[in-house]
Length: 386
Image (cartoon, rainbow, N blue to C red; front, top):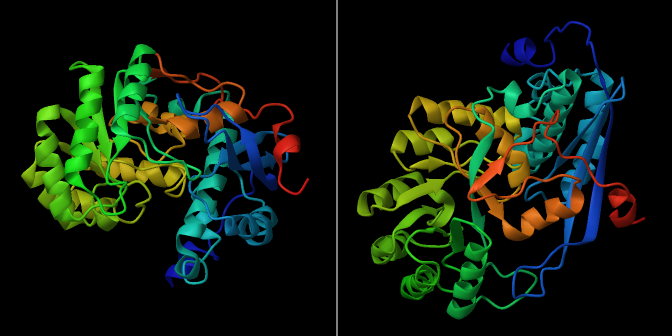
């Protein structure tokens, strides 16, 4: 009865606007600006989804950490069903109903969530363009600028891990550019070493002085004892927050860590189904939905509402900051947006106008939709298998 009532048997009125085309562009070798004092990464790839309505409005979206199999999933299964149904892009809760949880969610899991996130984001881009308003106005319009922090010092493409000296130099350089809050990854060793990480953070603190905010990202790499030890060592460095320090973001372990340190704990990126668990367990000081990974803006708005019920502010991690700005500007409990250096450089390479940090803040685009339009020729030049 549930499936008949809520899914395939649901009756809807004729759409005023229809999704007529969905295309997924797999781009590779896009030149990007490398980090300070490093020559790589200097290229990046991206998945860019293009959605067009029957009246010619085009919405755009990018992926988060999406496996390439999502391309075939969208092209062969999701897009044909959406187009066949003639879905109105304003009815974003209609789209998940087309894909019964027994035949889609259970076997496909996170791949389906990531694919649906791109579709949902493109729909919201179309909504904004159709009514001539920025997306953050459509979801509440709480503010027109958001605070930002810079994630730096992470080695990619096989590059060696940053030394303490390199981290300190890069941090000082970023502060000289006007950035006021920096985050660095801890636990990157083959075996996480809290003492080494403490010295790395201490080198950064000495380099930037007392007035700059510093935070840490554990990337789910540490055991609970290692995370507790690291936080206890780093409390005297005035660390603003630590993000996802323990394996699997286990809610009880995060709650225990919070009880052992004064450093705030942030988690929940990529955790569409765990947000309630974190809130009920008292696991986090900041909840971190990411619209590109957690089912889109629609799903992240539900997470934001849960967090507000517990009086927990939002933060953001895991890249795709330019799209996530809208969530944090739109809702009352929105907060920090991450400027993940090499991922933001990818946005700079892909899109015409991307907000940039200004003295610790990001000004939100006032253009209709998300305000992110691909550069002319970028798809043709860098699409895989041209």
